[in-house]
Length: 215
Image (cartoon, rainbow, N blue to C red; front, side):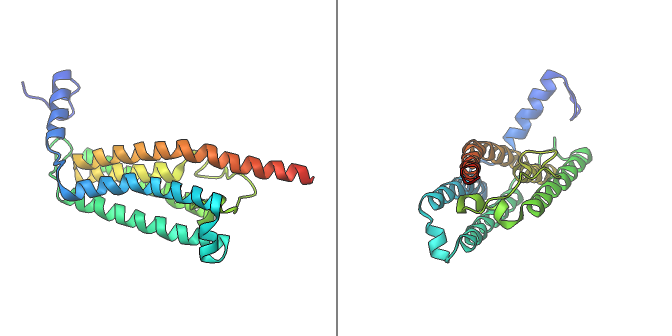
């Protein structure tokens, strides 16, 4: 039985999925390194940020809370660059899938990249460096919850925008390995949020309680 690439027949879908998975070289070196950075980075910044919150070691090391936050921001940004480079190098070494090698798929990839980058850039603009890079763990808190775009369309535009960018680049290149890495990116961000959101809420609740006492 012959199947068109976009057929919705169960047999065709099963065959297409098998073809996509078979084209991934799981043992490729840069693929493994990219997965390592995707998993390591959020664990690193969550562990370091909580250690800073409890001990203020970065504040002491850098000579101030703001400087400590900038130091952590530089480290997180550098790790992100390393992750993105490894992701790109991994995809260069991976085969293209005939299932994904379609203009419609590439156009979808371009849209994902565009939307993803808009979410990331506008999120950083709204939050600034300290708001983006865990300044609340250093005691640098925002006065009000940001509700302007992109936060009026997404609760976590930085993470969601980054995930969309990974997805878009994978589709644009037609590389199934990129989709696997993107899925891992989404999973790690989802896990990170399980730790970050309650802890951040606790920090702001303590701040509000202190303000109420003073008043």
